[in-house]
Image 1 (cartoon, chains in turn yellow, purple, green):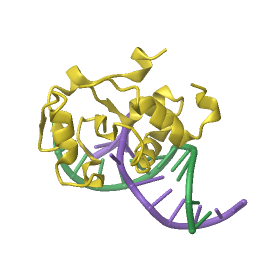
Image 2: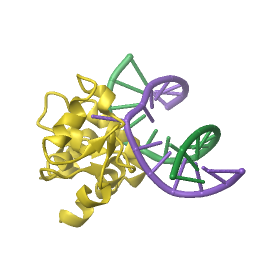
Image 3: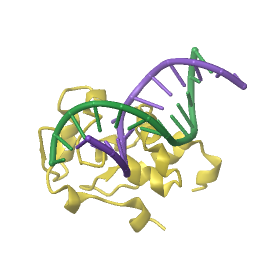
Image 4: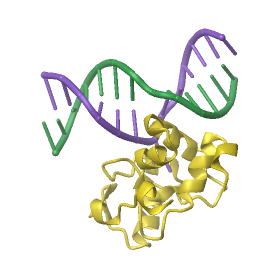
Length: 110
DNA sequence: CTCTTGACTGAGG
DNA sequence: GCCTCAGCCAAGA
């Protein structure tokens, strides 16, 4: 995939789609992988437009493993349910065993 | 071009 | 560890 021909938003989507089932990553990790480590906010901002696409936005959380973006999903706990259905334990918007389920794109992708 | 908007992050207290 | 502040920067108006 030629990321250089895509807009920043599209790059984020491409990486997000690579997140394995039952794993999660952070906005900063994605940004870093894209070579824009200072644009973590943009990653989250980009996810705003991820609706309608096959982007697992629920697998992207902030560095603490907190579902900061759950408010952008339909229900109040839809994001949490999606994660739990994948085997990720979530309590009060906080991912449990975050270090275990964390998936770093810069380490798993070429 | 300028200004605003953030689903963030790291540093400092 | 928590809270607050400031820097970050792409996209859209």
